[in-house]
Length: 209
Image (cartoon, one colour):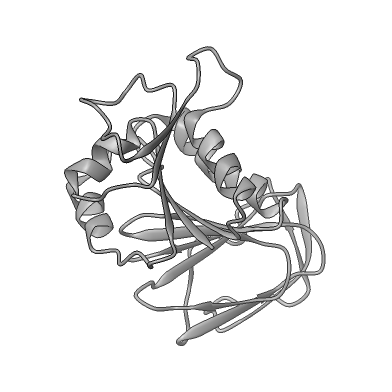
């Protein structure tokens, strides 16, 4: 089951229109993290559930939309609570929307949450109009689609045995270090790239040039 989570970042008009064009599946679960409901409502999207301390919602949530209310003094962000809920109900794919931009701390936390999702056996992705961000820890095929650039950023201190195919700048059994910029701004050489790693976790950032 796939979950789409609307965060409460300051979405640009371009990102908002992008979200409006998404075709949600009949079995998809749409979750709003507190103020993310404002964005969904503006786009005419009705979520299945709204989760958070409800300190950022404008107006009232309709009675037919499930809500889970938490106190303002809590140890997890509203987005984290939404991710926990998606995992608890069995979602194996979690896509974060409107979770990047605006506050730097929340944007960084959203990216870091992808590792939280990965370590719990699910696939996570942060999606914007111009980029998609996800983590890998094994051999992965990455379709180019509309994207032109691809960056590989170590999440663990080192990532060893990195071999790539289908990228302009190739790596062969390389060791990548978190403190270096070896994998930034590569370019797709064809319709698909393959990234293989032996140990560690890489953050993959695909972007439209």
